[in-house]
Image (spheres, rainbow, N blue to C red):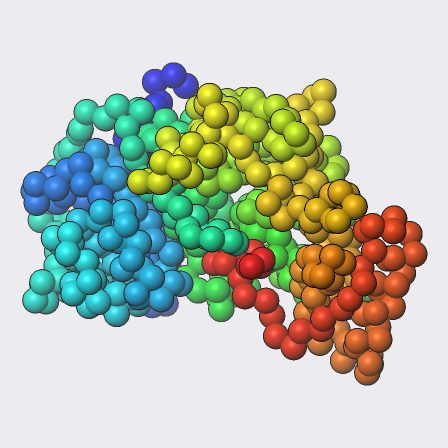
Length: 503
């Protein structure tokens, strides 16, 4: 697919190939609305023409809000005008968002009314901001422009000269430690990641998008790849309505993060053994779900077997924002249990001091205005992933832990906390766990599953957890034993990607 090198090429190809087929399906009040591939092409061009009419082609434009049709066509309208899209996490507090807008040199903000507080604050705090556009406003209100009105006024053809190597988007990582970094991805980075691997999914396949759209996993796989392969993507309007929408839209495939997969499994299991498992799955997922793609964090491989009993295939992959994001993935016809999949065709890897380094056309341009951090992450085109692991002779990747989380004990032994956390969290009573070093010994902090304890009539939760640790310690080498336990009453603080903040 050499001719497909930019997001503009993706849109043109999808309009030409799938035309009047539904690209997006969503609820508006009680109606179900379909938007065709032609609609996506026309509406994204209208956004490009709007940007051009303001004389702002090439500028940095932020997108703020949950997944909506307006958000998606705005993203392509921005990038296909040669501008830089800056998707912002809609869960962040207003002042943190304003700080990111300033850091990314944003000149225009397109926002969802659910974050009107940000638009108001940004007018005062973001001096570089020239235009503010509301996705829902009916007409102009003070300095706030109406997206819908502008879309209607700027209908027509639009094309721009775009270099595949030019900056396309800045995505802020929701790091588990330290300050978030603005990952710079080019058109080629995103396009190659979306088109280099044929998943053999048929055009017209129904999917449902559940992940936050500002995360690159959703953006590349659900949105960009979805358009390229011709899926009908159903938009979930609220985390509260997931179950309802699964039954309404009946998707065949969804992308999920491990934490959601684990909580879904707990619900499936709670249905008991009286009803056949495939019937339980049918009632929970609308009846058509066959494939769940897992990414964003490590998933215990046992879940692959557990979901298979319900007739659902889990394909575990691995990636990071800095790699646009997919580095490897398991496929229905090519997978290995325990691995995070086979390297993507556009990606190679090597292991340096147990750390996985990757190179290929999806590796980022660098971090925006962070030269030191960029130099630290990239070496001769190789991206240091920070993940410990290995690659086997068939190019399947295995992850054992995070380099920066490695516990180095006084005796020089290296311990991967993730390895221990994954093992201990297999117990139903352990809902969330963090393993770390404290005063030269290993400590586990656990948030127990209080509902499970109640159901099983476990009164002394601490004693039960201690027993789990004692059983683990029996088989663990001396240096890997856990010496102290903290029992939490509340969940751990997490990033919006649902990873526990470690520090």
